Image (cartoon, rainbow, N blue to C red):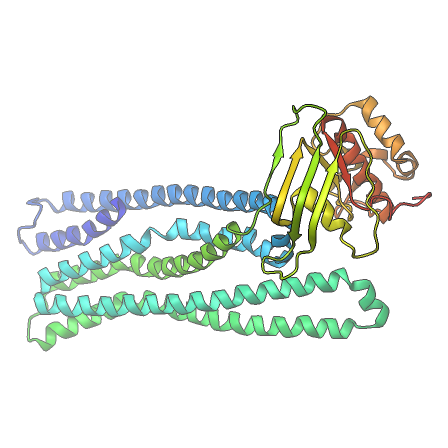
Length: 471
């Protein structure tokens, strides 16, 4: 706001300097032209400094807002229920964390101009009206309103294009991930051309939308850039048509005022676009944050040992919110401490769903579920992070050499360490070497067993299917 006031003060000083040259009395009652010139320079310097400080502060706030969005999205991602995760794909999550965070940052950085710019434009129209007359000021004000409404209309259209582009980009990323996951089958059957054509079709449609989007943004920016010239034309033409005399002081004063609007016009266009895009991103983030979460019914582990660790009574569980028939119905289960329970069944009979019911990862629609203590879980599909083998096993726990050695020997990972160049310090994952399915499964089991001494019970989902004797 201070920078806006200093920006509007400069045309008044220019008018005073021209009036001083013509021998007229100025509003500041300063007779020395040198003093007015120095004052103009100081005001310009202070205005530029105020703009720089404001940009620094808004940039810092916008970066903090982006970090908050990313951090909140990651935290929510860790709390999502299994049913909610199944409804989302990787492309949507990447868009939320990457693209939407940047849009919120841009809105915080430039959104204040949506308030400051209209105030500057309104003040300019009032000052022109005072200098040139009521009718000229009214015509200039109407011209400003038309320009602003045109900018807002374009901003809405730009926001609509951005929503379509975001949806199409997410579909393209999803399709690309699906093709990459099935690349072996595609190569085996020679479907490379078909896969390439599918991605190309989506990309061509996306580029067509991007071209329209960029053309619209270019039109909006050009209109804002030419707005001061249009204001000068309207102001001077109206003055001449009314038969009024256009003197030098008034001409330079009006041109200085419209030039002061240049930054407001240019930034206002980008600010309205950024705000429109941020509103779209905020709606998407809101839907994501309102997604179902895992309901934690676990109790502290300082319960008496005679109580069961897991108890499910008359429980019904389902993956989908609107499922007609529950995935699991009338489940009654009691798991006592220090016991081994093995669930056996045919493929698709619901063994993994029962595991998720114990963990609270599936929606419970009926019955009572009580879990006393903390859980260690090894999933059916081993998960490996981009780190060393040891850090994959420790997973944030403190390193205990004796316990670590015992776990490694129990999971038969020593032969695998001998095959690796740097033993358990070898980096694995996307940035490291590739492991077989059996090796990944052994590391996942070792991770669970290493943490099991501090937890109350261990849940393993089909832990031995990927293992073999010589991994």
